[in-house]
Image 1: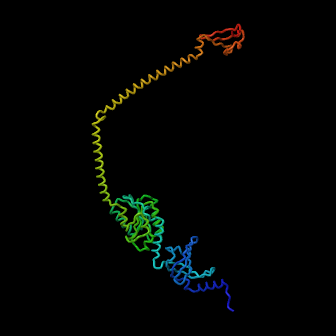
Image 2 (image 1 turned 90 degrees about the vertical axis):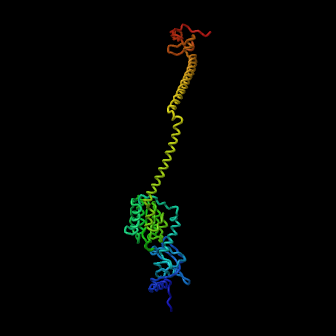
Image 3 (image 1 turned 180 degrees about the vertical axis):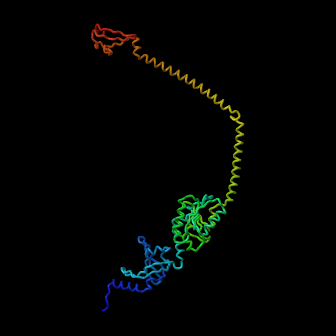
Length: 402
C-alpha cells in the first residue's frame, strides 16, 4: 500500500528537496517584474518575476532592499539573484531575492533618473526658488577635497582674477561611501558660520560611479536647503549631476565656477572709473543748475534788500499791538458796565439798603429774629438793628395789629 502523506509532511519534503539542490540556493533569474508592492510597514518588497511562459512569486526583505539603488516598477526587466524555497504555510514555491539590477539599463543610471523625477516633482529644480549669485562677493566658500585638482584649479583662477578676494575651504570627501554625508555637513557648516556670500561645491571629472556622491538625495537636499547661493562644479562640461539641477547656478568645470563667482579685478576698476566719471558729471550738472537758480533768486525780492522782510514783520507787529490794545480797552469797558449793573442789583437786594429806607430788624436776647409780637414777652429786652447803629429796648406792652 502506498504511503499516505499529510499536507505538512509533503510540503516539508518538497522544501527539503529544494534545499538539498545547491543550484537553487544561489541562482540568477532573468525576467519581468509585475505586481510589485513595497510593503510600507515592514519595508519588504513583494513581486512576481515572469517571462512569456511562466511566473514565480518573489520577495526581497528590507535588509536587502535597502541596498538596491533604484525602485523596481511593473514591466521592468531585471536580473536578480537569490534562492528558491518552499513557503510551507501557503504551499507556494517562492524566490527569495538578495540582489537585483536592471537588465539592459545600468542601475546607477536608473537610480539617477528616478531621483531626478522625484526631486523635480517636489519643486527642487524650480527656477523660481534659485537664488542670485552676488555680483561682488566678499568671501567665497569652497566644498571639495583638500587634495584634489579641483581645489587647485579654483584657487588658481581666484588668484588670477581677483587676488584681494578671500576664500575659505570646508573640506569633504568627494568620492566613496562617506562622501555624500561629508559634503552635506560641509555645506551645513558654511551656512551656520554665515560669513561667505557664495559657495562652490564640486570636484574634477570622473566616471559615473566616481561622481555619484553628487547624485545622492542627501547632497541634493543639503544644496536646496542652503540659505547661501550655491554654484555646482562637478566634473567636466558633459557631466550632469543631480547637484547641477538643484544648485542656484551650474558651472561646467571647477575653473569655470571660480570665474563665475569672482569678478575680474581689472573689470571692477574700469567699471568704478566709468561710474566715478558719470557721478562727477551728474554732480557738476546739479551744482551748475543750483548756482543758476541762486543767481536768479539773488536779483529778486528779499535777497536784494535783506532787511525788507524784517521791516514788514515790524509793521505787522505794530498792527497787531494796536489791535490788541483796542481789544483790551473794549473788553475792560464792557466788563465795567456789567460789573456796575450787577452791583446795582446786589445793592437793591442788600438788607442794609432796606434798613436805609427806614426799616429795622428786631432780635431777642438769644439773637433770633423776631417776626411776630407773639414771640416776645412784656419786659423782655430786645435788640433793634437800624440803618445806622442799633438800640437796646424793653417791651412795655404788646399791641395787636390795627
